[in-house]
Length: 329
Image (cartoon, rainbow, N blue to C red; front, side):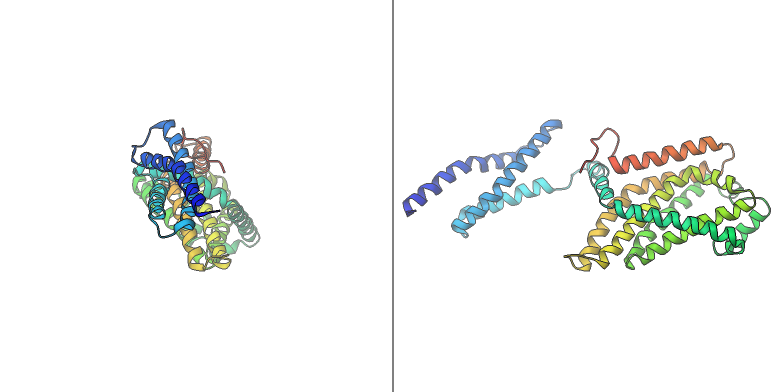
């Protein structure tokens, strides 16, 4: 192709694309549109952004140091920032955590969740069998005071409201739950071994204590105490353990990243998921402080509270906040 024809082709291309670039600039200057118009604008901006990538590549091949590539690079950076910026409003950012990020991350960690559940259930069964066959082993899982209470026909939870007001009890329980959750995840930094220890130990304790109280006819009363808050509490601990296992796997098998990059990627994801789960831990603490030790609540009411709170938590974490479009892969 002759120089004249190349010049004509370039001039034709510039005339064709100039209006598209001008349209992108206009869209960047316009205020955000509400509702459905905002979605249409975002899609149009994304389409223009993809075309701009091709234009920039072509301009660099024609004249890398000329004014056109510099202009397109500047426009590219502006459009990229507009598309990938975080929501400016705090509530909008929080809604994004619940409606987009957390559902996606929980689906990505499905295998880790199932592994954590399997380990926890196996530990419960093992703890039950050990204490059922060898009752003296309960001393590994329960304090002498707890054992003494059970042997006298009472649960250590019976007089909680007489010792600590519900408000203080709820605060302490919520703080403890958050600490256990963070520990279950953080110990995943020991290549997952720490998380396995926390998960297994808690399962052994739960199974062993239920077996021990069952020998004294108190397992039903213990279930009555834990069912209201336990669904949410154990679910969040399982989620934290699954994140800890994911952290351990990322450190063992970082793939094409180095271990620091793998660690940072998993901790960012965990921070998002645990942030979304924290309000439910607070809710579990309130239930455990105000409902679980109160004899006025019957077993049916406690089961309903446990089922409803657990269902609400999983629906929100998997599908987003009510009234929002659910996440889809």
